[in-house]
Image 1 (cartoon, rainbow over the protein chains, first blue to last red):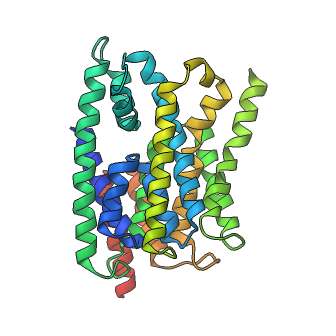
Image 2 (cartoon, each protein chain N blue to C red):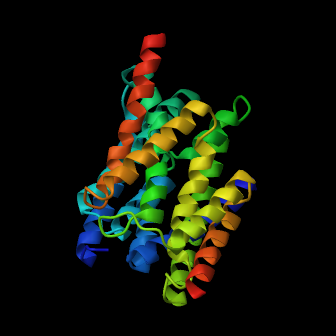
Length: 209
Length: 105
């Protein structure tokens, strides 16, 4: 239930963000149906909305999508999915389904994965449509503060990921890199450069081991 | 947005295919290929600086310049609410409302 409310709220915000960025309602809904991984979708519309190039928008979405590859590896060890069902399981491989499947009691990982996947897919796409239609009808996004809703959404997402002091440092470094890069690079590039903030932490971990 | 509608469709399709390929790769390749500790850490950590950068870009970026406008006011409200552990929708709506009020006065 907690996941349902969060996905609904997040989907509404994404629908509104897509239309505010300049995409049509149909394009915004296509992202939720086809891309179906929230942070990548938000990054893509964020870069496009800021006037970024197509390549930067795609690269940002892909960088944020890399963790789904590792989720799939972990899920593969938990649930036996064979043949064409793998194609469907792949599309449903996201934060929420991985979290529920890994937290499920022994033997119920498969049930948890498919049930969470199906309900999040339906809820996410329904909420995206409502958010997009709502934002399209409301008119001037600036007067309603909708452009300020997007950074707030990213901040709320970020807060879920930052649990330790070391990850807070990575977040602040990423923010600083982006702020320094904004005046000197085209839109979309500051976000990609911020990925470099993970390098020191990865190298440091290697020295410790 | 600087792209034409067909340009935007191209971005949507390419990003969707790429992200689907990333998901499918995890199911398809042998698990031991992706077991390296540094690779695992990189994939777990990557969203953090990217999301932080997106906060900055969406709140402070103008045309090749940092600008301080109503969005910053909305973000300040969002920071307080996140620290108070407010629900997602409350954070987003309060930030929008704060920016709208700042623009109206």
